[in-house]
Length: 332
Image 1 (cartoon, rainbow, N blue to C red):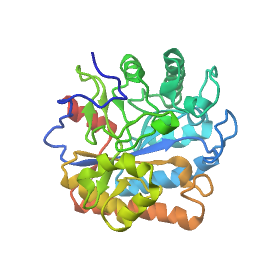
Image 2: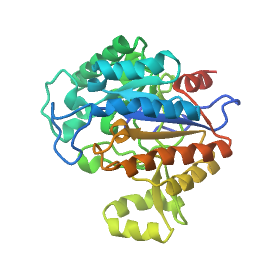
Image 3: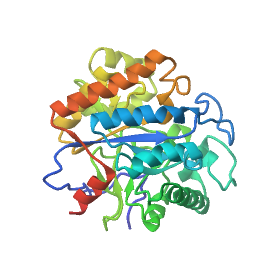
């Protein structure tokens, strides 16, 4: 029997890409409603005003030769303007669409709204399934295509999620945030999961694309062993980072400088990682919706981050890729 998707995979599950694939980069966008990140979860206290900022970002990606994958949740999938904006790029082959489940805003509304229930994988399996299927069908109807990739909101996979994805015919998950542990807040522990893509099941029907997070510094080989200790001693983590001994670098413009991300890219590529998975949240495309973009200067820094990252990746010979290309390569 396969292990639950929340557990690290057994040995021998690493995905093999075709020789033409080389090392690639995938840009994922958690495309979601705006809400108060510091407040409690609610059913209705959210907005979608940042959708008007998506066309600028899409044009920016097209100039870079990047096809973003928009992982959309219920408020986005059911908003006419969001569907128009993303659907136009999708129909032109300039973007892809996937699924992102925020259970607190996704019907049916049968569970209490709470921190624990913000992780879809903590819901009763039948409720997780019903929410997921309604969202998948809403996306397929709105965009005219079957989504092929899933990300649980807040990275909240559960023991039955893999079975749900296989039965729904979704071949890729990208919910594992390697080197992070959310168990203190009722979420999954991904601190021991691989960084490289791997098959969740022995039959190779479900591929996991972990978000890319690496350890950097003289102690990086001990990073996984030290991380649980540093989580309980954040000041010590800060000291180690300032001394260049150990820092955890996620490949995202949210809270990670371009200089830090470039160091992380070097580590990932030099370690032979075949796929880098970048991520950020769509409300960061406008000011005032996330802690990372509070001003116009912050917003321009976000765009500058992508400019610098993709220029460096091109110099290192790392080409952008798509979900379709990934599926084609691993199946061949």
